[in-house]
Image (tube, rainbow, N blue to C red):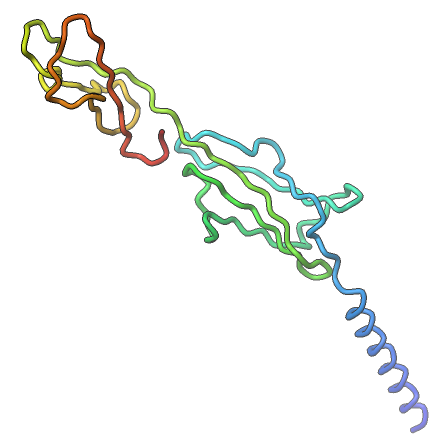
Length: 175
């Protein structure tokens, strides 16, 4: 019986010391570590999913195994799996197991620039307005949208004066 009590007391002491050690030493905080995106971290929208990897480096510059953290991808503070649309994606790693804290880095997909030149009905006689000079994308733009003159449609066209137009894409991934 004395031997069983002795073993029990030793075991209780080991468990108690382990708990005290865990409470005082705690998990390794990753908030001072470096989180980096491997390769490109800025892209331009092209309708394709973007792929990338992250790497967490401790204070010595050694890579921390991905088993020690979980990755969450966020757009405007909401979890996302959209790696195609334009905008900023926050990549956040949260320590787990012997690691605690979190670290974030931002991955950016910029809006694409609309490319194309419209055709228009040429004005050949006087007292015509811009509404008579109809604009058309004529399939020169990759995306759908609206063309309009910068001046009001009722502007009377003047000889040898240049008029500018604007294209507004329907897709928010384009400027």
